[in-house]
Length: 398
Image (cartoon, rainbow, N blue to C red; front, side):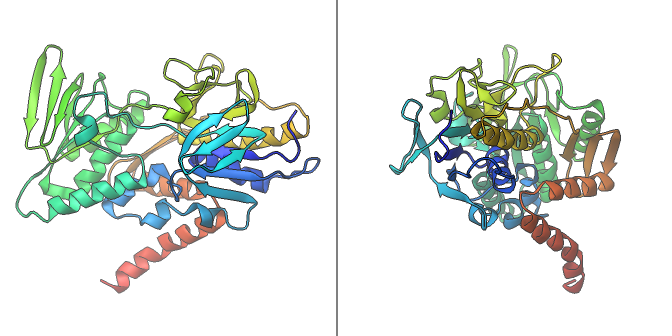
C-alpha cells in the first residue's frame, strides 16, 4: 500500500519520464489525493530525439527540438529538478543527487533511458562523438562549422552503425556538406536497418547511393584514432586516414545509477518488468522506455522506441493513480504505428497503418506526426505556427 501523501519521483525526462509526468498532471485524481510529483533530469531541456537530425541541416531551431522543462511544466503540479542521480536507496525509499539533494518517494519511476557506450573499441571514447543529446548536436555543429571554414578541402566522416540513427545522420550530413562530403557508413551486420520494413530499407539504400555515401557491411571497428579509424573484416584490417569526424551511433547501455541497483535485469542490464510496468518483485517501482524489458506479447518483444515510450507513459500514469486508489493495474498494450525515417532534407519514408510513402510527401507527413506528438499544446502551437510562417519569412527576405 502506498501512503496517500508520499511523493512520486520520476527519474529521467525523456519520452517515458516527461510524458508520464504530463499524463499525471492531466489525468483525473478523483478518489485519490494528488501527491507531490518530482521529475528529475540531468539536463534542463527535453530533447525530441527524432527531430534532432534537423538541427544539423538548419531545418529546425534548438527551441523547437529541445524546449525547457520549466516551460513545458509551467502551470502543472509537476516540480522539475535538474541534477544527476548518484544513488537510489530502495530500502529507505530515497533518491540522492550528486548535489546532495534528497527526495523521499512512495512510488518511483525509472525512465533514465540509455547511454551510447563508446568503450566498444579502443580510442572511441576519446575520439568519437555520440549523437543522442542536444549537447551532442551542438558539438557536432561546432566541429562542422570549423571544417566548413577551411576552404577547398574534402570533409571526411566515418559513421559507425547503420541503424536508423546512423542512416539518418549520414543523409543529413551529405545534404549539408554537398560536394565536400566524403562519408563512410560502417555496419557490423549484413544489412542496414536490419529491424526496419523492407520498403524503408530499400528507400534508405537509394538515398545513400544518391548521396554517394560509402557503405561497409560486415565490418567492425578495431580502433579509433585522432585522425583515423581502423576497420576490421574477419582477420583483415584497413586503416582509413585523414578522417575529420567519427560519429558513434551503436550500442545502448543503462546508466550507472540503474546498473548499481539490486533489481532483476536481463543480460543487457535492462530492468525486467511486468506488463503493468512494475519491476518484478517491487510493487511501487516502475520502469519504462529503454530501461525496461517487458514480457513477450504473442511471442514478440516490445521495441525500445520513442513510440513505445509514448504509449507506456499513459499506461503508467493510469497505473500510478490506480495503485493509490487500491484498484487493479492495467497491462500495457502496445500498438505498432509503423516507422518514419528522415533521408535528407525534405525527404523521408513512412510505413505503418496501411501506408507506405517516400519523398517530400512523406517528409511532410513525418513532420505533422511529430508535431502531434510534441509534449504540450503550447509547444505544438508555437512550433506549428513557426513552420507555417517560415516559408513566408524566407520569401520576404529573399
